[in-house]
Image (cartoon, rainbow, N blue to C red):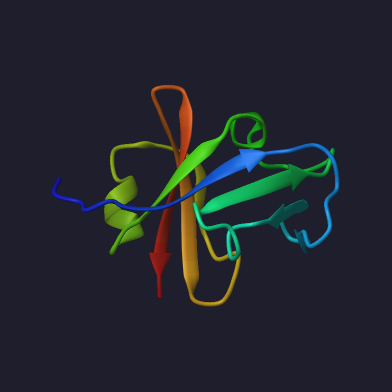
Length: 107
């Protein structure tokens, strides 16, 4: 497998509401910072009834951009199947050595 992984951002869970956070209703979580943070940090706050895996909700993740998300997840432990949280983007999460890793494909 010859997949190129390009660093995209780090996601860090947080607990308290902050000004400027945006809500993704389909996933029941808030996020902020990625668009404005010079280090590519995205903070993520999850609703109690959010159905995403506990690993994603509680452990920081690193995200990488890939050209073909379906090739990139082959043979890996997928914990969130490919989906489109926003226009023009497909994301999936895998678990690697106990840590969540987000893979992103720009359409």
